[in-house]
Length: 496
Image (cartoon, rainbow, N blue to C red; front, side):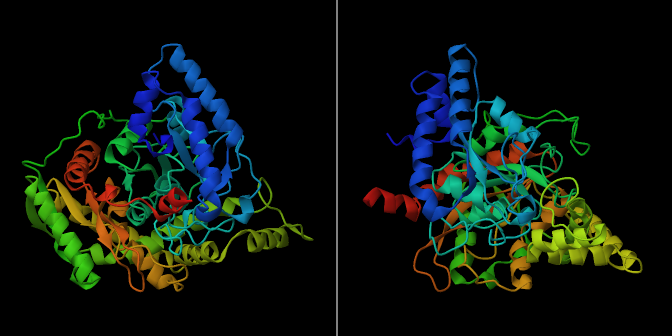
């Protein structure tokens, strides 16, 4: 039995029953990491000793009679989340040597549930990107084709789970940064309702949009992680104080009676014949499972990208003002404080982060605030209103998770084409809605030879995570797209 190939649910069951130990799973996972990391590059830090110490404590707790929902489950933590005693770099030179003095609430809850932290995973710098190419500290490759990107910004966590270097990865989603890498890496990438999972200990990019969620190889595993992380946290002012409906124990196998909306504005014909056929087949599969397909409209969806790229950079400009070389992180000395600020930020921030800071600062500046930022917030309100009207006619929405499969490195070198990658995921983020990507097929990308994963995005009303995960589970179990192929890196290792 390949221990690193087990699902999170299976690992927890086996360890809880005493048939396996957390130590065995951890050692198998660390061996896997050592074997494939030189090719994949999922992690910025591999936590060998912390993982072994945590596994020993999990085994001790199990022997003491505790029931842990994620006992011994190997965990990849995106490196914009604090884990006490480890580097938390945000994949940026400005925080390259910063060691977190505390642990993020979401991470702490996963550890309390029995997870073992394997490493801190790579990402786009400060979570700003759609491909994981903006990291200043490392290159992460898609396990299904090492010449292609894993998606971003949570590309390291996605690659770690896809390459069997972890069973669950934690990511953060601001405009699609969990869902898109989920689609690119043949995973379930789940963004809960904004405020449902605590942001305490998550280094902020855009505070009104950032949300932590899981990447996993199955909906059941994603639901287990969600059940552990969700819930009110007094340390986070945006955390919602509302009871959480457990999802993992109530996952249906059909969609009878569920109304699923197909968005008129999200027509897939322009995506190419192969992708259009994949999505039409996915919609037909939903219908075969008992769902009633309903035509719905999101008239303001086309404004999503423009709205997001005013609001998110504006919040980024405010949040990243704290990185100036005085309190923590990189410091480049200079004759005066202003020059020190300038030199530190010039050396510490990468091109994409600087670009977004400039956009955001401009949008917030005197004379432009009303014309840009305020109008973007009004557009955001209209987008949320359109979703509310759509959900009056349906229970969930189905649409693409990305406009194309994973692309080759440097294929989208201009910012505009990269920003359009988030076209399908941004509207849900602006409305704060729960959404996920679930594998729905395989397509051969332009110029490629290896078929790459394609993701179906499902979206539900606020706090309807249980319904959303249930719909995704029924579709996943009926279609089994995720199991059609293992990643190239696994096949290469098996031959060696």
